[in-house]
Amino acid sequence: MNLPAHLRASATPVCVALFGEVLADVFADRSVLGGAPYNVARHLCAFGLQPLLITRTGNDSLRDTLLAEMEQLGMDSSGVQCDPIHSTGRVEVHMQDHGHRFDILPDQAYDYIHAGVTHMLTMAARPEMVYFGTLAQRNMESRLALDTFLSDAKTSADAKSPRFLDINLRAPWYDAHSVRRSLQRADIVKLNEDELQELASMLKLSGLQPASWGQQLMERFALRYLIVTAGDQGACLRTADGMEIRCPAAPVSEFVDTVGAGDGFAAVYIFGQLMQWPLPQTMQRASAFASALCGVRGAVPATPDLYSRLMESWG
Image 1 (cartoon, one colour):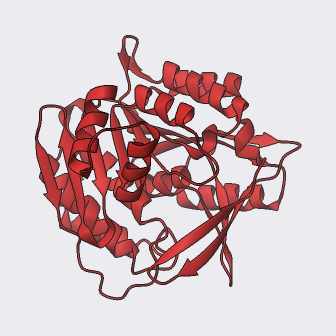
Image 2: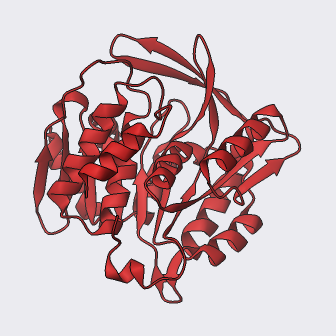
């Protein structure tokens, strides 16, 4: 795929830096590596970018599995810190009718991401965009590392990297303070309709309509873009200059589960922004990829076939 001129001029692959958790998603019949930042990084790598995932794992068999998988996929593992005390993150996934429920374990290695190591990696990366979420902010040490990450992430000496916030509210691992600080640091925010309603209550947004809540979020936190996903009802993008783009959900030929659909949406949106696709096209392609992931087990395809078909259709 042809890169825009501003990216072709670079001698190094296009870097997107991601901060946050790696988790073992434990299903009834198997365990797979996941976590929103890792899922997004895997997709971006499959699309030909160079994601730098800054995370922390335990010194255990899950770490070995992660590093082996990243090597197999051609991913940069230099940002995967090793914790000698805490275990690699785990989450139990309980499948329900057309959905799923998570039980996330406390006090995991990703709660202790080291700020000093993060500083060195981020300064060297010069990422074209950065991605972060809310789950990895539940402990002070990782919150400090995230502050370092966001302060250091620059495309040049005087230009900050655009900041993509993927809000993943997982009770009880969030509070108003961390959500507010995240929004204050973001340029682009993605959340689902349930999370928008939760933020309306948490931040005391006025009115009863989701459109009004979204507009208030944009104004209060000076956001460039706000993306609200609504499952089979599609997604909506708002821009700082008042544009609204609504995108219907693509049909799912054979539904399996919704695990990772939002992560897939985020990855294609980031890719589209870096490729300078028109916003309506970016939204349509992100929605189509999210729907396609609902037809596979887990958060990522088992083979590269889906990526190949998409890249070919995107030209």
